[in-house]
Image (cartoon, rainbow, N blue to C red; front, side, top):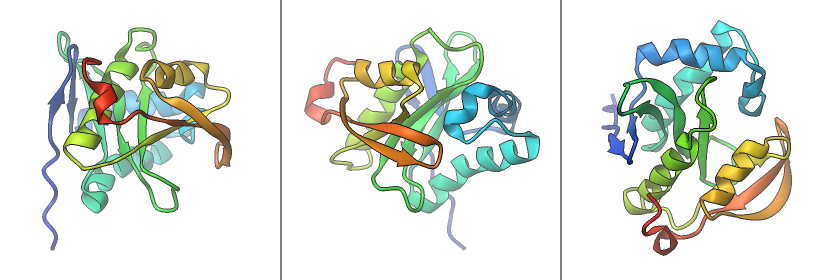
Length: 177
């Protein structure tokens, strides 16, 4: 039997990046029921939302890295997810993010994804990373751009046409958190 990996807890100015908890499922079920989840394979019902939610913890077990739950430091509220993503069949390791309804427009996606990207480079030895963003998701395109990523190419993926953003290397990240 393989031991479960220790999922590190990270911090940024306003967020705690931590392992997912059972209590995080309710806001994630709301997320996956909302049309905004179309970029994450939704909308869907609770049973499918549970399967998608469980994949985040499973990714850590199988790859040794994965997405974190985002918790706002001052309130303890679960606000979404960010992290390292490289499922089977995917073309390259990715930095991903998503916020639950009611948490958009506060800078949480950018702040959390920057911290995750730094961890990818410093803690997990990644040399490069991308983020794949739907051509219809202007908010996430803006996050990638605020992170300093450059749009590299168009692709077609299971959720429709998307843009591949290439993130800057570790040296370019200093002073961005």
